[in-house]
Structure formats: C-alpha cells, structure tokens
Image 1 (cartoon, rainbow, N blue to C red):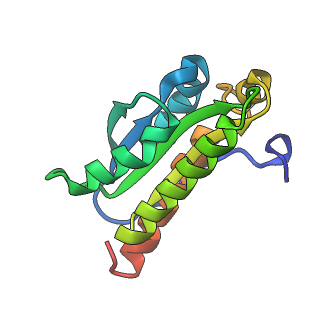
Image 2: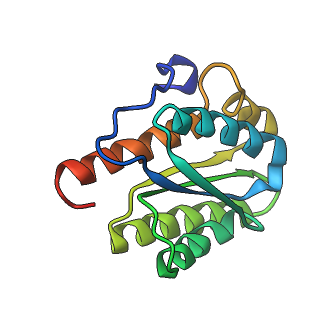
Image 3: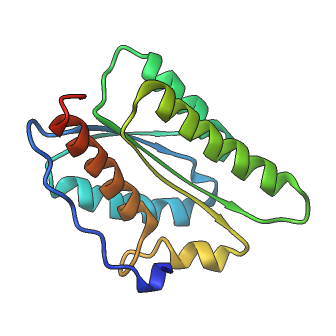
Length: 160
C-alpha cells in the first residue's frame, strides 16, 4: 500500500496515565521534519501525551540519541524518531539509511522500547514533501500512532 492509498492515521486508545513521549528529530530537511512533527503532535494531543522534543544533527545520530535517552534518568513510555535522507550521487545514502534504521531497531529491541519511526528514505525532496504534508497521509502521524499502539500493547501485557 502506498502512502496515497493509506487510511489517515487516528490516535488509538491508550489505557492508563497520559503517555510520556520523547520525539527525536533530525531536522536536516527542516520543512519535511517540521511537517512530520506537526502531524505527530496532533496525534499525541488526542491522548494528552506529554511530549519532549530534541533535535540531533542528522539521521545517523538518531539511534545514538535514542540510546542516550534510555541511559538517562528521565523515563519515557515511548519514542518517535523523525528524519529524512534524500538519495545523492554517492553510496553515502545507503550507508546512512541502513545504519540509522538498523541502529534504531537494535536499540528498540535491546531495551524493549515502544518506538515509532518516520525516517524517510527517498530519491527526491518532492517525495519527502508528499509524505510530510499537514493534510492527508503523513509519516510523522503514522509514527506517532505506531508508538502509541506499542505503548497500549506494553500496558495491556503488563510490560510497561
């Protein structure tokens, strides 16, 4: 299913206290990441989530920031990572995309984290803009929904 065919994201019910979320952004493509951020914030506001937002230098730093957050004293129920990598003329694109996505998943699996990810890996900036518009399908909103569904699952299984 493509982004254009997907149903619009809706915040799921999350039992218990309002979730505490850490939103980690790599705003190299600021307009794209800001669009995803706004959509994620709309989803989180629907469940009265408490959101803390931090920015990192780029996509490569997203998994590092997630690991730093896990090590920190502040506790979060869930995490969302937002960023964008646009293909260039070198193999740098493949390296950054694979390393960043694998890094995020490795940290999430190692620590049993509720993680929603919208790291756009696209050929053109226009593709990223289409996935980060304020109206219609938005990968930031999808990542927020994924995070909240994981939190709801963790709470339902007494794993939170």
